[in-house]
Each structure stands twice: as structure tokens, then as C-alpha cells.
Length: 535
Image (cartoon, rainbow, N blue to C red):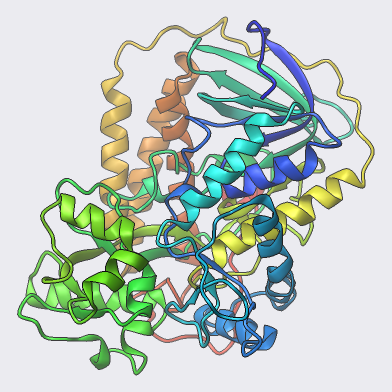
């Protein structure tokens, strides 16, 4: 790592990467031999949704599998809304993405097959194509890349820094409107620094913390989407929030995911009385796409008035469960749940945003000099519902295409950038305002904009969002910024975009299910919001 000396208020790099998950770290590593890179992360380098990913990475690696099958499975899960060019682009580059990770030293689980690596199957996939590192793939990938990021002399890691807003030519009154960097809060020193960069990349992850129950880490507050929107970029398909069907239901198991791979290996969903219910909802039963399984669980919980359902793996040998799912097995044992003898209590929870900042196949946004990769971006791959384990694949593929595009361009000279102005603000006197508004937002988003929606619920949510926005804007204008205030401001804006997108979609498709519009329209159309006309 190239440590930063002192606390100068202005710094300059060739590339500023905001976010340190798989997308951000892989991009930084691809650039660092030829560019000076700053990698900004809100907490420590390993705190991201990527490191929490259990299942694995989907790619066509088995000769019995095919590109066409993976594309078809993605389209089926995506309810016809996947972009054909983007989907094929990602799937066709899957093998080389996996090879890059293998060459980096990622310890994927091996076996005696001709491939040499064990492949598992998850819901929505017609073949075994999920390469994994037992049941902690994200952690294995992140640890491998983090070590290399820290050792690279051209990568400056700024931990405990959170981006406040992007700096653009338009905001500075310049004739050439491109992204020039960002204002970043150094949390440890409570000061905002100015970072100029020829190219800026948003890799800030998703929006899960906008909901009361989520599998996401606390850092998933929609920062990149909100900053890009404020800078004039389009966002698309924000209504499609994937609720993972199986989050561990336990008072001491905050955000712990029970991997899709358990159902891929024969796990059965049962009611508390032992009755299996998925065959009544879909012919694919437990291997149906996530939106169908999540809605089925939600329906059964409400119909029977139960707090959770149970994922039954008791028909599998203990040795199999210990070998293939050591993380899940150990965590459940710690909580007093023996998965070899009893079902795992599970509930759906907000998991993944299929929409985001509109990008092209080189990860470029509407603002020149600004890129978006990973869950922050809308590439068109996921359609109305992400196919399991396509997300990490998307991170690696688009980090490669973004890096290639950045390296193909000359470095832009950055004009002198103004410092962050705190001359007219003061220290906050009522921090309770932030925590109260955060709790209120997450509760009504869960109640009104969750798995099943109605027009009336969406109207109620939007009314409350507008009240919160007014209060938060006033707070932002009068008090010094803090980590919590920045995140809350971004979450409320992200919630606004989710609700506006949901109101636009007058049908039920994929992850968006409306009681008022239960039918699916014959033509699949994206929901694209423009900043100047839809805010």
C-alpha cells in the first residue's frame, strides 16, 4: 500500500475508485501497473457485500454446458427484460474472468473432475456452473485480492473515507462537463478532502440498508447511485429489488445468508408442521428463481401466520454438510441449530438491486470520465430478476472492460478544484434526527415497497419520503456532514428512485409484484429515470 502522508485537503490521482468490493478491487488491480489509483472505502478494505457472498460465481466451464444455456437461463430468470447484448457479453467473458481469478490465486474448491474444480447448481440454472470456495466464495476472493491491493505501490487505500459528492465541470461552471473527482469525508479526522482524478469509478455496491431486513452489510446505502443521479446520470430498473428467499431467522444472526446452494444440493422448504410447499407454487419447486421462491415463502408465512419457514437438509449426511457448507454449519451450531437434525429457520430479506446507474459495455455512465461497476451499475444483465451467482461474474467482467477503456484513453488534466466549504454550517445539535429518520425510512420501505406492492402503498411511501427529504436537506444545509448524514441522504434519494420506478411499472414482472397490476404486459420495457424531469 502507498500510505497517505499528512491530511492535505487536496489530492490528485489518475483514477479514483469509490468502493472496495470485488468490482472496485479487481478494477484497481487491473489499472495499477499503468495508473496511480486511489481506492476509497467506507470502512476497512474487506467490508463489502462481495465478501459476504456464499454461493459462488456462475460461468460456462463444463463442456456439457453452453453459452446459449447460460444466456437462456439468465433471460428466463430476468423475465424477458435482460439486455441481449449485455447478457451475451458477460456470459461470453465468463471463462476468462474465472481464469483471471484463478491466476490471482483464489482458492476455489477442487475435485477430481476433468475441470479440476467442483461446480454446484443454484436456482434458475439448467446446469452445474457455479464455481465456488466451499460456502464462503466472496470472502475467499476478497481476501486474495485485498492482499494484492495492499502490496501494490500504485494503489493508495483510503480506509474509513466516504464520498460526499462527485465534482463535475457543470457544478464548477466549466464549459466541458466531465467528472473531475469527488469530495470525500475523512471520518477519522472529521474533515472533507478534495480528490481530483482523470477518471472516477463508482463501485459502491447496493442499496439493501434502505430496508428493515437485509442480507447486506451496513455499508450498502446506495451511495454511488445517489451521487450519479445528483451529477445528472440516468438510473434504470430501480423497482427490481431482489429479496433473497433464505436469510437466517434468529435474533442473534444479523443479516446472515443461507446460500442458494443448499437448495441446489437438495434442500427442501417446509412449514413449521413439516409440510413442503414449493411444489404448489412452481413446477421447479425449490429450484425456481429467487423471486418466485421469495414470494412463495412470503405468501405461506402470511397465510399461516408464522414467523418463518424451515430449510430442511436433514436428509444429507453430516460429513457432506460439513464439507460443502462449513460456514453455514458452524454458524448454525453456534446459535444452537443442528442442521443435520432440524430445519434452518429462514425468511426473505432484501438482497440485491438489479437496477442502478445506466452504463454501456465499457461501464461508462452519462457523465464523461465517470464509470460504474458492480451492483451500483445497471448493465442490462439482470433484467427483472438476477440469476443466482451472476453478480460476482458481472463485477469481474465489467471491471475488465472498464479498465481497458480507461487505459485506452489519455489522462485528462484536472483544473484547480475548490475546497469543500464549511463556512456557513455548524456542528449538529440533534443527532437523534438522523437515527430516527433512518429507522422510519427502513420500516415504511419494508412495509410499503417490499415483496408485494400496491399503488396505495407506493403513494404512502412517496409521501413519507418527500417529508424526510425536506427535513434531511435542511439538516444537510445547516450542519457539518457526518458518515451517518451522508448515508441517510443517499438512502432517502435511493428510496425515492425505487418508489418512482415502481410507480412507473404498471404490471407484475420478475421482482416487481403489484396486486393492482398482477398481469405481465406482452412487451418488456426498462424503467429509465432522467434526473432533470423525474426527481
